[in-house]
Amino acid sequence: VTFRYWLKKSLLNILYTWKIHRLYKMKKALNKRHYPTGTEACLCIAIRNQHDPFMHPEETIPLANKMSWSLLSLQGTHDNIWRQPERYVAVLKKSLADIY
Picture 1 (tube, rainbow, N blue to C red):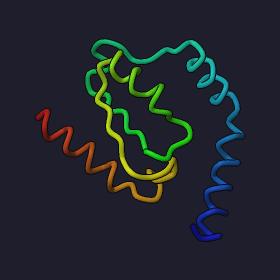
Picture 2 (spheres, rainbow, N blue to C red):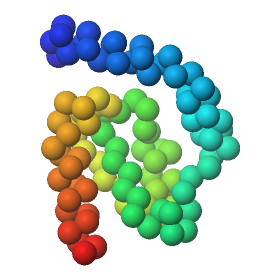
Picture 3 (tube, one colour):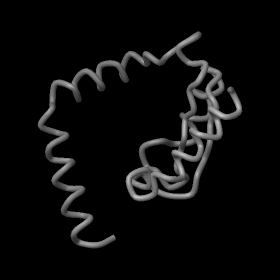
Picture 4 (cartoon, rainbow, N blue to C red):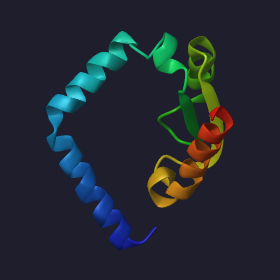
């Protein structure tokens, strides 16, 4: 990871934290464990990166099973979605192609 990448990511994280009301709403929903159900969840794909400290398999696997979500585990860390978005786009494209 380059210094330029780290600096850009850090600045974006600072801007993100300034939107504290959104963070509060997200935390409130997380505490209530309010997840999409029924028809809302029919196209839900949970993608977990194998070295992501924020999505532990002990939590995500039972949750995905309970909610009937598709669960996919990819190599990488939490920030891989920003560094290698093509992998995630490919998953979405394949999923949509399978449906339609």
